[in-house]
Structures are given as structure tokens and as C-alpha cells.
Length: 399
Image 1: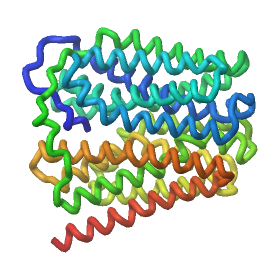
Image 2: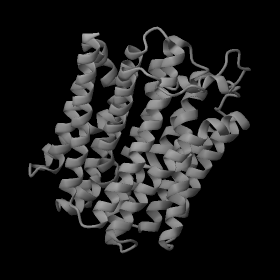
Image 3: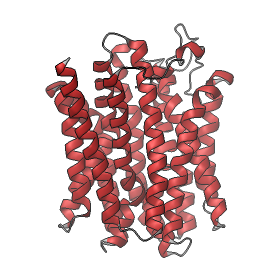
């Protein structure tokens, strides 16, 4: 899933495959699992402890997504000009500092700065770390290792959902420090695991435009719409459970842990279904399940059904990646280089849609729009992705 940033062959000796895999896992844990998703269970606490108003807390999540977009766009230019291990270490350090800096109950602008910083570093790590690690992994093992790498996102969600209620007994500042301490551990664990990888020249990333391939454009737009559907979960899930539906912060944290455990299993589960059913069935089914789950989470149903909805979405947060990759390969059969460019375009669309969606939904929330409307908007975006994907399948069959 990182072919667009593949290194050139014959890289110099470096750390073992196991150490490189650990480094990539820690990068996902720190840059996305904690620095992005670790913020979600903090939102109701920031509001109840009067650090920020509800709208401000939502905007901070949106600023992180905006930073992620910037980081994804900056990643390749940075890696072509600087040693890759330096870029990756600096990005992990920035994520850790950003979490620690938020322990100070400072003005809103201070938090905007550090949420953007953690977003930028997360975007850089997401683009560059898997490619660096997979350069040390034999081709026949890259699928399994890729699943391990993105398992760091799920572990970060589980860790934040488990630790936040415990750390809050000491205070909100201490909670930020605890999450920051996890990031520091991740930085140290990954420090010597990054291989020295020569980045391919500009030719490896040039021509990333999808061209005139209608099927590829459909995949790109569907992936962006699916990412837009994830935004309410990334920003509001815990707060909606804790305050919106009145279940309390412990119930919100439990829902977030279930979400994270599902995310841990997501790539393996979705990969297995794709192998069994084929991409043409697995991807539309994934869109349909997500749309139903997004609506279920805000429906007036028993709490256990809310957990089911959160788990379904959690599976697809990382699990949608192998399914979309499969559709990209179908759209560009037998052309790995164009497939890599197509995936780069998909990644850019995802970053753009989540950043725009995060800002837009935060603005709506600040103006008093309820959780039910925001989650239903997310469900609608996924329904549009389903309809567009089915239309693309019909177009392909007619051809």
C-alpha cells in the first residue's frame, strides 16, 4: 500500500526485518494511534473540565486532520532532500512533543499549534514509514507485515481508551503527559530500526495524476467519500457516547476500546474476506456495512448495539485499505507502476476529504448541529461511495 514511495533496489545493509517492523509499528502507534486517535477520548474531558468549549474542542480535531493533509503532501519532498531515518525520527519526536506540550492548560492558539504539528508528523509517518520498512521485507511477506504495521493504529486507540479514564483520576494535564510518555517510549523503541533507504528520483512519483481512466477516478472518489464517513467517528464518537447519549465517560472509553480492538483485526479480516469473496463483492459489502453501522451508532438502541456499530466501523478504518488497493489493481491490471501512482492519488484524496470534512463538521458542531446529523452525514457519504462503486462495476462490465 506504499508502492508509490517504494525505494530503489539494492539498498545498503541496515537493521533486521524484525527491528524495522517494530519501528514501523511504533510509527503508526505514535503518529496516528496516539497523536491523532488518542485525542478523541479527551474531547468530553476537555469540555467538562472547562479547558475549551465544545466547538473549540471539535476544531482542534479538525486542525489535526488539516496538518495530516500537509504532512502527506510534504513527505516525499522531504524524503528526497533529507536522510529518511532523520525525517522519520524527527516526525516521531514532533508527535511526542506535541502530546506533552498539551499538558499545559494554555490558550487555544497553543493547542492549535501542537495539534497541527502532530497532524503533520502523522501524515509524514503514514506515507514514509511503511515504505521504509517494506524495503527490508521479502515480497511474499509484505502483506502480513503491512497488516502488522497498521496494527499500531489499533493499539493506540485501545491504549488511549484504556488509559484515559485511569489517568483522569490524577487530572487532565497528567492524562496528556501519560499519552505523551507512550509516544516517548515509541520513539525510543523505533530509534535504531529505520533502514537507510535511497529514495527514488522524481520519476518514481511523477505522473501521479489518474489520467483518463474512469474506473480509477471512481476508486479515488469512493475512497475520499469513505474517509469523509470516518470523520464523525474520529472526532465525536467518545463525546457522543459520553455526553450526547448520556452514557458517561467510562462508557465512551469502552466504546473507543472496542473500536480500537476491531481496528487491530481490520486488515486481516478484510484481506480474508477479499480472498474469499473477491474485491467486486467485498468492497461494496464493506461500504454497505459501514453505512449501516454509522447510522446504528446514533440510533436510540441499547448500548450493546452501539458497541456493535462502533466495532464494524473500527474494522474498516484500516481494513478498507487492502480492499481499495485491490480495486486499484483491477482498474490498472498488470501495471505496478501505474498502480502505485493510482494509490498515491487515493492517499491524497483521503487526506483532503478528511481535512475538509473535519473542518466542515467541526463548524457545524460549533453552530449547534447535533451528533445524529453529523453521523448521518457520514453515513450518507459512505452510501454515495457504495452507489458510485456499483456504478463503476456496471461500467466495467459493459466494457
